[in-house]
Length: 260
Image 1 (spheres, rainbow, N blue to C red):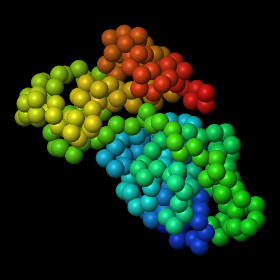
Image 2 (cartoon, rainbow, N blue to C red; image 1 turned 135 degrees about the horizontal axis):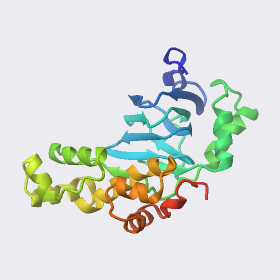
Image 3 (cartoon, rainbow, N blue to C red; image 1 turned 90 degrees about the vertical axis):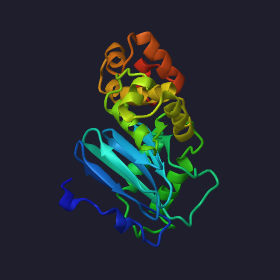
């Protein structure tokens, strides 16, 4: 969809209905950044996206949907050409299950079809008619209480940002914390403390998580487990598979089949 004909998300924020939905398309490598008053569920019907929000980085693969509470600034990067389905929820509509923070959640086959249908519904739909029932079913079909293995915390310290950005760009970088310290001008002890304070993880575990995130689009693209393991810094597939299973709960060779 050319940018000139792209739907404006602001047109879906102030409708006098509790829910609204739209679809859009983004070119590979395109980045969009904004916030809005309505909470949002965003699903990539086609393609793979990366989302930054609330000092965290998420990789959102197929069969997953991203939840963004109201007024949280976020950015989306399209790994490939992406078609998104966005479902907006008025902030006055609340149920206890809705998370207070952004989160990746599962998409059932029924939810996917409901989102496709909802994205074609006029924002001024009849709440008592079929369209209103479809909008309500989207909320009822959501499972809000899942674990989220698709995210890492992003630090605020400038020195840690250099390290984390370097590892995101080159997940196979095997430099120790002492070697990184020489680059950013800080002692390993200081960096070790900062990693735990700002990301909640020791440096070694944070690197494992970013490697697992980096591996996911490669696996979805059809690369072998062995190829992916080497690409993200592991000497053999078995050690990579063990880390991947521990973090995601899924064997890497089964990852592409996310509907299990």
